[in-house]
Each structure stands twice: as structure tokens, then as C-alpha cells.
Image 1 (tube, rainbow, N blue to C red):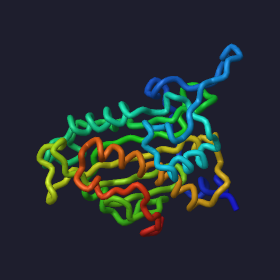
Image 2 (tube, rainbow, N blue to C red; image 1 turned 90 degrees about the vertical axis):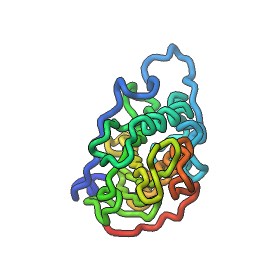
Image 3 (cartoon, one colour; image 1 turned 180 degrees about the vertical axis):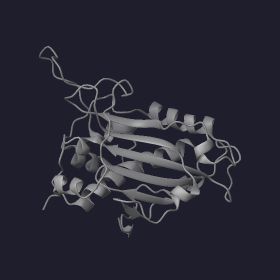
Length: 239
């Protein structure tokens, strides 16, 4: 049985995601193409090829599509996000005091609606208090990386990074990276996947984990920040 998305929102899920306008990576589809077929790519080519086979299937499930615009993120976008984290990191300074704005590593434009994004993945830093909390209202906790929280509209994944690219990061005082996926395809009613709440949650988390793993590699995080390409997805705590 599929998730009743309207009922999900009625119980308090926060899922309003502003569509990407000027910040979208490349132009979306839609409009008059003069009768020419629009070039598309598969999920395996989205986000600079960062998605594992399972994550690519998860993206298709979440969007209800198997076609994406070529502007759906590149390896250069992943590298740029990692560079912004590198340049903004100061060892020993709390995340809220760092001058680091969320860095977009991947945005998946909607195929038909110009200026909107179906999914977007961003990176910044977090405090230990944020990363180590046990509950997060409306979200289910998963034991991936340092910690993860997910619902149908959002996914948060935290991982530790000890790297020469983040000067001063150590095993005792690692940089704590926060990765966030926003699922506007669902929150803005462009897609309503035929699946359970847990299936949607874990599809969000699968996509986010793949992108986070690639960015951890760009950052040269020791042990890939504790992330793996095919994590076991088991809830670790309640919503």
C-alpha cells in the first residue's frame, strides 16, 4: 500500500522546499522546444555519476521518472562543494560561527517545469550536539555515518571528516559534516511514489548517502567518513 502523503503532512511533517530559481544548476526542461526531442540522461549519470545502482533506482522511484536533464549535477559540482567546505573550515570553531553557507553538490531539475528542482543535496558543518541528538521531530533516525535522520521530504546525514584538506581536524576533534537532501518532488506534489513511508524515507537516504560518500572522497576524509556504498538501512530510533 502506498503512503498517504496528505495524511503524512496532516500529522506535522515539515516539507515545504522552495524551488531552485537562479541557484539551479543549469536550466530545467519545459517550454516550446520547437518539436525537438529533449536530451536526457539516466539516474546513473545524475550528480556526476555519484549514485550507486541502488541509489539510482531510488531516484527513479522518488521522481517517478527514468529521464533527467544533463544539468543534474556534475563531478565539478561535487568538487566545488568540497572546496567550499575546505575553504570555510577552521579547526576548533563551532559550526554556527563558521562563515560557511550550504554548498550545493547536486540539484536535479524537474524535466518539465523550468526553474524547479526535484531533489537537491547540500553540505555544511554541524555541531556535535546536532549530529549526536537521538530524536528529531517528524524524522526517523538511522545509524549511518555519525548519525542520520529522514522523513519523506528531508534527509540529514552527518559524518566525521579527518583530512589534510580540513586543516586541524583530528580523530579527537574531527570536522562534522552535515549533508542535507530536500525532496521537492514529493513536498511540492510533483511525485507521489507508490510505496510506504519507510520505502520513501530510505530512498531519500540512499540517494543522500551516495552523494555524501563522493563528497567525503573529494575531501579525502579518513575511512570515507565512516560511509559505505551500500549501507544496511535499519531504523535506529523513533520519529
